[in-house]
Amino acid sequence: MKALRFLAAPLAAIALTVSASAFAHDPSEKVTILQDQMLQNVPGKKALMIEVDYKPGQSSIAHKHEGTAMAYVLSGSITSQVKGEKAITYKAGEFWYEPAGSEHLVSKNASKTKPAKLLVFMVLSPDEKVLIPLEN
Image (tube, rainbow, N blue to C red):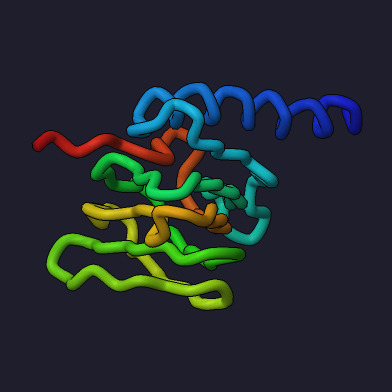
């Protein structure tokens, strides 16, 4: 049982990396699932810890998350904009919150010369999608 638990996260990371890369402007955008755990104190929900590495100038497509997301900039600067709000550039050590269903219009590395890294914590149901591309 313990061996299966250790295999689940790497397999999920591979699946998310493939699917997230298909939606990214640059297919080399790196998305890694660090943890994927069912929450014992919140039946029917799970927590994800995801690391997103942006190359200089790289951005994600406009999207939404079915689950709640909290993001923390590990390094570099990230510009983020949720529908109805202004775009904000966050530096390393800064963070933001996105309620479930928020439309994430902008998510990009604010620098054209330096990489950036983002840590995302999400709470969602096992059947909810991490990322849903928005139609133009």
